[in-house]
Image (tube, rainbow, N blue to C red; front, side, top):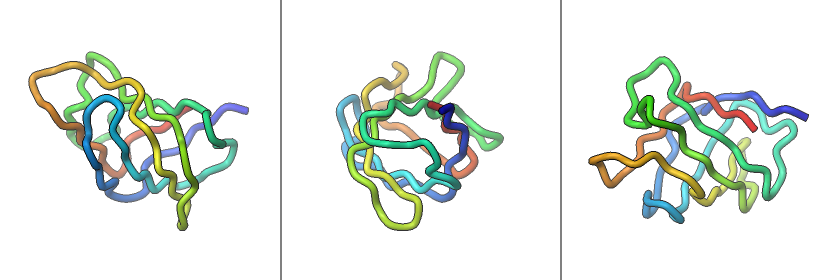
Length: 93
């Protein structure tokens, strides 16, 4: 089953480099399970994800209110050492 949803609210990030953790709050969790890679691409709001790529995360633990604790498995390279994930960013898998 294809997953297509978006970030519902601000996602607080911890150690936001490759291998770090991020908590995502999603509009829908249909089709999402542990070990299903999710790709986050910029939505309408400005983001530093950039055109060079997307952030790929792997869900680790389900959280309340359509949330997941995810491990950052692939992140775009760039001059910044942090990632910004915003409400409205697209999540596919």
